[in-house]
Amino acid sequence: MSDGTGRTRSGAPDPGAPERIVELKGLEVHFPIRVGASDTLLRRQHGVVRAVDGIDLYLARGEVLGLVGESGSGKTTTARVVVKLTKQTGGTMLLDGQDVSELWGVKELRAYRRRVQMIFQDPYETLNPKHTIREFVSEPLLVNKIGTPAEREAKVITALEAAGLRPGADFAARYPHELSGGQRQRVVIAGALVMDPEVIVADEPVSMLDVSIRTELLRLMLDLRAERGLTYLFITHDLSLAWVIADRIAVMYLGKIMELGPADKVINDPHNPYTQALVSVSPTPTPPTAGERAQRTILVGETPDAAHIPSGCRFHPRCPYAFDRCRVEEPPLFDVGGGQSAACWLAEGGGSLPAVAPMRSGLAAGPVTELSPAATGTAAALAAGRGDAE
Ligand code: SF4
Image (cartoon, rainbow, N blue to C red; front, top):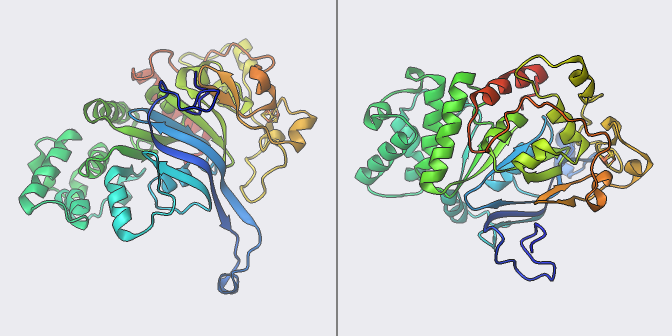
């Protein structure tokens, strides 16, 4: 029986464990704080920003892992490490079991990015207004010297049509200003698909789009997973979006994973107070009663910055359950059963949170692959209410 590490309790590989296509072990990204050119020249620093502070995470082949957190949680930095746009300062990264942490040569990076692609948040910034859609989608093929001109054209058309832009030849000839926001993001998706990747890292891929278009694009991403066997790392600040698309959810706070597990378990039975607070403030389809409002956990205070991480449990200044131990000792991720783990002293030995309110979440209950327009609709309200998009 695996304990979530992919190994049995005796340490042998677990034959029933999911195949890990990407694995991060003790990943750290610490940025030096330098003030002015002299600090840069003399390599002097005034502390570090601990953007990612030692995380263990894996992507199982074919799954959608939702990485959720507020602005400054380290989720986008983690995503950039996975696509090798940012260099880690500690820990290792594996792709299909091979250590790729130090793979930075131009040729090696090209080969890597054929397998791991990224979809960025803002299609308006990603697309060059002077380039046609054909030029944008074919660029990675040209850079990687893939195929003849005719083969590249065929791949571009196939990718555009897979992203729902039909007829592909018609869209290929257009410029970005001729497309709607949803169509532009489909072009960005086509630009990732054209390389036939195995892993796609999607950084807030629908946060710039209208609610009506979000559901369509989330459905497209799930359809592409089914057709092409894709694996997604889905980055979002919005727990309700993660709930409708992800198989598992990892909740990040100030560079650490606070909770990790199957999406339905993390939403319906959180074992970390931070997750509990995020779930409890999710909007409801109907106005909450006074009793339900009283059960909500409203976090007090601002998120500390990653250059001044609190001692002990980094969430303790904002945690309603904090006690003495929390202020001095940092909790590891405790296994709470069912593939779920939580970094909280209250979860030690599989314990639950005290006074867990039977929250009436606005997040639709149901299979995680079943897209709920109600849930994706509430996402916009949640995002607008918090105003914390990264
Ligand atoms: Fe709160 Fe303590 Fe748990 Fe941290 S360890 S989340 S401060 S109860």
